Amino acid sequence: MDSFFKKVEEVRSTIDKISNEVEEVKKKHSIILSAPNPEEKTKEELEQLTIEIKKNANAVRARLKSMEQNLDQDDNANRSSVNYRIQKTQHTVLSRKFVDVMMQYNDTQVSFRERSKGRIQRQLEITGKVTTSEELEDMLESGNPAIFTSDIISDSQITRQALNEIESRHQDIMKLECSIRELHEIFMDMAMIVETQGEMINNIEKNVTNAAEYVGRAKEETKKAVKYQSKARRVRT
Image: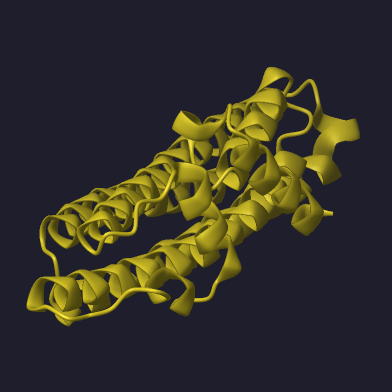
């Protein structure tokens, strides 16, 4: 059991590290959103945090899967033993803690996307190009930066600054959506790990759906949110 508890502490420590990194991501998001043209250093630091979170999340996922496999091997012979119940409980607690932290990360990403989209919409208004939320989603979905600047004449310093910010925010959103898609894999694996843990599987399936909806909870009732959810489901299948 000493070896098992050592692994538990290692996993818990890594999850705590992810939680701290998520808090740092929030700070970087605030800095980026508060400046029309954020420093590249800040964006690089954010990207490094994203890489670290992914690396640590994959490490936790691998450890939890390994622990689950070991429990399965001992299931028939030792299911009623005290040690088995302790290990099963610890695994369940760690799984829930991991999912909670990763959902905080997902919520942070979705919030950043929405706020970045709001900045794009405001900058488009400055250039004289008024768009609805749905029209803006269509533009983002196209993945073509030029669609934002078509029909806009950069005949003033203000307009040029607005166009620069639009391009920068669009790049941020494209990187963010890639990161959100990568989260799907982690959630699906976690769903498999905890499939015997009763109600928790329902919570995780709900979390997967939330992560797939790029536009976040505020846009769940719009047609565009439904479209994004449908696309994400096709990716998962």
